Image 1: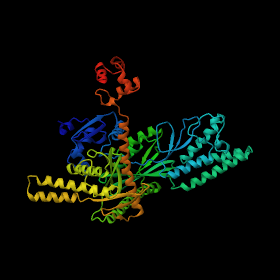
Image 2 (image 1 turned 180 degrees about the vertical axis):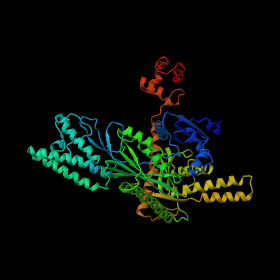
Image 3 (image 1 turned 30 degrees about the vertical axis):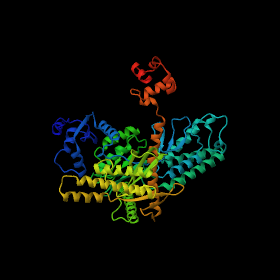
Length: 619
């Protein structure tokens, strides 16, 4: 048995990483320390701790630690372990948005410029992220219009150049007769432009224009002049501050009772090229500097777009170690600054104010949706948790259901669940719905702290009146069963009465149908009396997304089961024949029929097939 007090005495005073586990051996927190002895002991001492840390400590069953040589190594190991295990009490970078980037494959002989949402470690240069996809596409269009670079995804040798060459938009490197130095000069200018170094680009263009004029290359000079004017116009639109550094990220934090918003401004050469927001729950009692430290480590490690400066409000504990690692990664000095006055401080305040506005708007949107739902559904309470269910099958085969959750007006895809129908045979969607709702309700009644969470306030069934009735029947059945269980308990009558009152309140779940038209588009919400409810356009869009999400969940699971069944063979039912041996047998003989015709000696020639297995196969 793990004795925490005894293990605390064994901790070394060396740098390292400590890993906290709960009683089920789940990793709930990973941290780093310059001195493991001092840092880990702090958690178990009777000092003032935040509610979050108090809760974490109460769940610690045992811990382990890894000793390293220095703080930098501890920092790298901490980040890797957090990314791998995603402990619930660490600051985790969670965002399902994929922002666009502009990519230049600089390792290519003739680099191309592309729009992408995927960053891979392929040696290319990535610029962004662009919070507005339109801005990224506009910049890419500008580059393609003003620079004669190839626009083909793959550069293959051709017998004749494409249309872009003939209209003067490409130097046709595919023909192999382009001057590499001239082409690379264009690429370098595009890189400077994307990095915000427009002053340098404009100066170079001035020199090239003068040289072209002196050589009486007036057409080239005019082309360079137009390019310069276009860059000046694009540049003037983006000026946001008097900050002169070329590459800065500015990070601001705002908190509400429910969430923390971290907002980043991306400033390149005094121009803001985009921003991002990240939201975290249950961090309101964590100090800002602790949130910032966790966020910076999660966000910038393994990120190809490290700025030369990161500006934040408060000094963070492991500032020097993070600066050292990011500087090594970037290949030049990276600083984390906490400005105290002037333009730079105002920019941090601007990021914080925007984070607050973003958070306020998010809370406002949620509140408005919840209030409208409450009014439309004629409820006494806010419908904080709504669940929707959809059945998927083909003629009664591979019958499954999908479940999705809307929490506080937001669709939570991570709370989606899938069910395989167990008790219904043949095509009967209402019976399938009744089975699934029954199983779902029992999950929460039997295990309130389980993966399904608390019971919903409302259920939206994907369908009309038959699905509404099936859902209500399931609720009634479960209520009746649970009441009978309570009545059989050996307790006081008053206790039974109180339990039944609580149960009736929990299972007082409103039920509505999400009805589609002939084109399979969401048409309306329907109540149990077949009345279609009047709702706003915004709420209709949300309900449509909700219905589409649950439909996708169900149909994806259905296809998975169907595809699995289609690829199944008689070999899958034979003990000792796994995936590898199955593939080897089919590769050797071509089909199950030919395997049946093979002799035991022929079967034994396949790698891994023993005499015993061969006899079992033959049998």
